[in-house]
Length: 512
Ligand code: ADP
Ligand code: MG
Image (cartoon, rainbow, N blue to C red; front, top):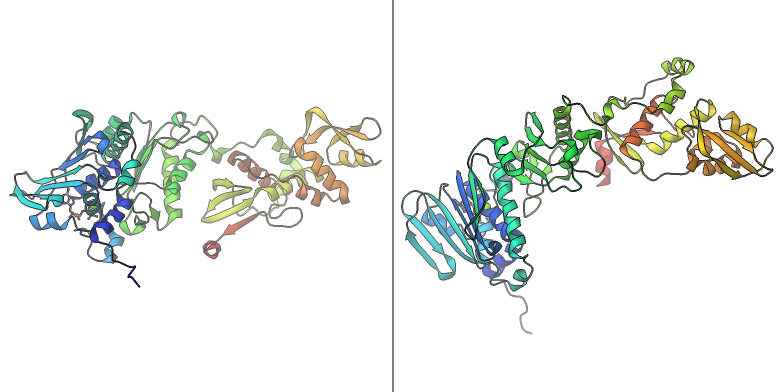
């Protein structure tokens, strides 16, 4: 039988690997700029033609390479940045896989000129040329006819202008993180971007426009847009970990939480944030494009970012109510009566007080941070609040705009409902008109509540099985939490099921 298995040639392997690193001109520009930064450049010049599809040129004044290194750097897994696997954990430089140049060279007409200060070297692998050349210290990389040998890739490239826009963003992102380096970008002899080395705030505002707030605590520095400038998309959000541009939903959410209720729901504030972490606290090796990071201690990072962001606002008055000074809505007055205040003094306090940090709501759970992570079941909390309001007739009855008409019968029904603070009257023999409800009970929930209650007249069950809501907003959740704090009993719902729980690391581990 004929042999079916063949070893792939080095060329094919490089082309396959290129698929991971080299997606489009912007990703090449990003890799080349990172190499220049790693080489200690203070001036980086980028030029493109045809959005980078015809030409990408990146030149720097960095350390340059020897003739030997200039040849070797085009081999896959050739890198000066790591020697053994354990180095991966303590990585301070940008690139480290030793893949980028080999991959780029595999899918383009590639040329390299480099010098350590003396005689330079020119390498043109396609023609098999390695020759001396004149060049000052530094490196120039030319990438021509991108994907000329990978038609499938070429077909999926964007239009030159869209592609150029991505390159602009790549250069801009690098420039944001490296104010000490001068950058320029030229397209068809037109200067698209040009910034001189300078100070970080000035660099950011030159590129992105003015920012109102400054975040500054140890290991975190950044600029934040005013809440009014928040937008419907995340585009203006830049995060750098150890000056590497990264993407982290965790940090984005921490920033969002730090803004608190200053932000309307669904809006994202533009920001530029820099985190400085010890290399072993970050794992950048999760994605070939190295865009996504993982943190060894996610909770700590989240808290630090959130606190730093919140602190930057503490001087400025908030246009909205901040969650930590949330005023209870007026209907809460039912439990603030004198007798109740006395009674609640005897109560054991909820282990999580309102001074803790509400993080976010997921479904019907409020996540709160206190040392560890706590979950509050909002449905059960609501049942408890409603139960105490109805049983104690403490709720301030709120008049309904339209009386609720309900088909019902039963001689004592109206009287029993009235005992719970529900104002109602018969209209005709079989129709009950509800005029006012104790505040925690909403008109929309009432029919289901009534059905549940009429089944066995057990208020405990009725409040627990009342209409189940699927999700809550953070503001609603905080309000429920506050009302719970005013309850006589805070531990469980009227049927004795726990309202809150601490989530321990072992609980999370069991999930995996
Ligand atoms: P990596 O950056 O992951 O090491 P690359 O393929 O991007 O892999 O680069 C391979 C090697 O070539 C680098 O480790 C570095 O030694 C050298 N190199 C690449 N670009 C430059 C540059 N602009 N200046 C100096 N050396 C460079
Ligand atoms: Mg590299």
